[in-house]
Image (cartoon, rainbow, N blue to C red; front, side, top):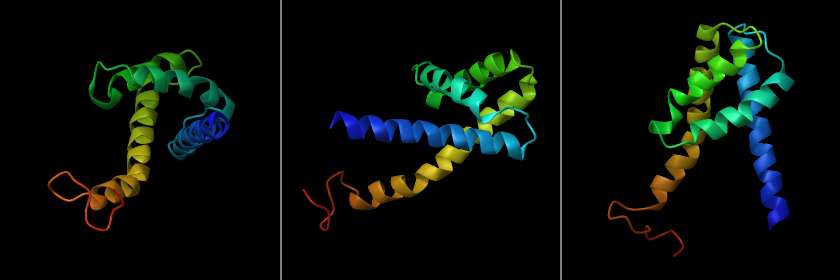
Length: 115
């Protein structure tokens, strides 16, 4: 169980870094994939600290500080963070809709869902 879970976790992180890199390319922020592979995991860990809703603000500040050290403008780093967060949110919507559809309004499973 540990092996497949670790593999899926690493795949998720790689896809998150790929998403951030593609967003950076789309807004003309010059950062390499490998630089984001080093910066993104600590940023994601920091954004999980429960001091804001969804890590908003913490994630942007972390990207601004870490990417600022390699010459990326603070505004570009914050925009990269916001767009990456929005992209990942949009990518998660199908799963959220599936979860909502599986439960009825009373909080219990719907008739077609396994118990």
